[in-house]
Image (cartoon, rainbow, N blue to C red):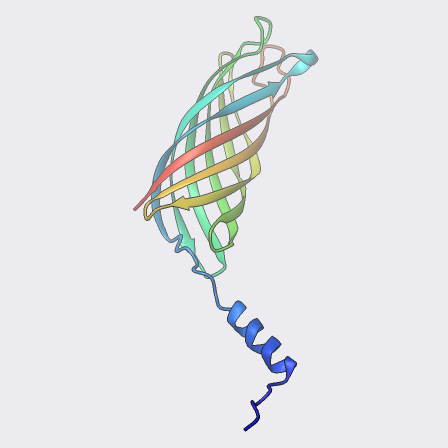
Length: 176
C-alpha cells in the first residue's frame, strides 16, 4: 500500500491556521493606582531653560473594548525645576488625561490628550497635554509603563512668557 500524499497547499493551509491562533489578550478593564519617576525639561522666554527629576502618583480607570482600550487618569508630578532667578521655578504639574490605545496582547500602546495645570513660583496656568505611552503587565496586578508628555503653558514666568515642557516618566502601577 502506498502512503497517501497530501498536497503541499494543504500542509501550508494547516500551518497557517495553527499559527493564526489568537494570542492571549490582556484584560485592561479596571481601576489602578501607581507611582512615577521621570525627567522633566522646560524652555521659557529669552532662552531660559531647566531640567529636573519628577516624582509623582497617578490614579485611573481603563475600559477594555476588545482591541481598543479607553481610560481616564489623574496624575500629579512634583518638581523643583529652576528656570533661573529671573524666571522662577516650575514646582508641580497636575494632569487630567484621556487615554486611548491598542491592545497588542502582551502590551498596550496608547496616546494621551487632556489638560495640565502648572504651579510655578510666579503663577499657575492650565494648558493642553498630549503624548504617547506603552504599558506592559507583569503578573496579575502589576504594570510597568513609560510615557512621553508635552505641555505648553502661557504666562507662568516672571516675564509673562510661555513655558514649554516635556515630561518622560517611568511608571509602576497596581491594578485592582
